[in-house]
Length: 160
Image 1 (cartoon, rainbow, N blue to C red):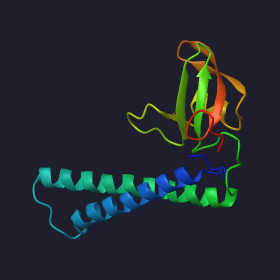
Image 2 (image 1 turned 135 degrees about the vertical axis):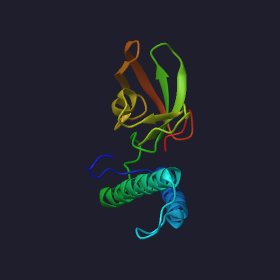
Image 3 (image 1 turned 90 degrees about the vertical axis):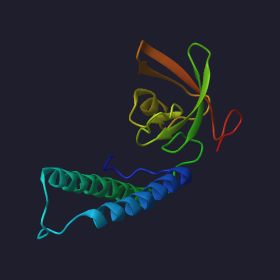
Image 4 (image 1 turned 180 degrees about the horizontal axis):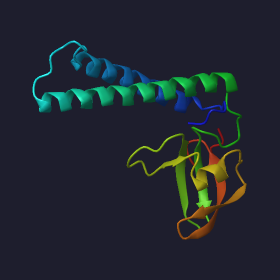
């Protein structure tokens, strides 16, 4: 995540807050299974399992710290500008080949979410700060492509 304060939409904030609550619950579950440093560990399989749970706890702690930092940064940055594409925006775009797609601009990739475009992807970077009617160019897998911002919001015709 970026260290620069950047605003996020209310939808993105709610998603991060839900993820944070889930992570705290998962962390508490993992922490409850860890033995104290003075506990006797059985065989190597027990030791490996203990190490895996400790790794899981570190991974959860890192993600909790990242989300908490991002939410604090969003508070500093204030609300996102209206009428401009930003993190959390739902954007309908028309590509150079005439096809239209509605995507959500997100901070991090979510596995198998084909409607999410990360803010640091070529298309995401090109769209940030744009308005309906703007045309952007970006690097696509097959070379440079273009897209027009058709609308902001829930779909065509929306602008907020």
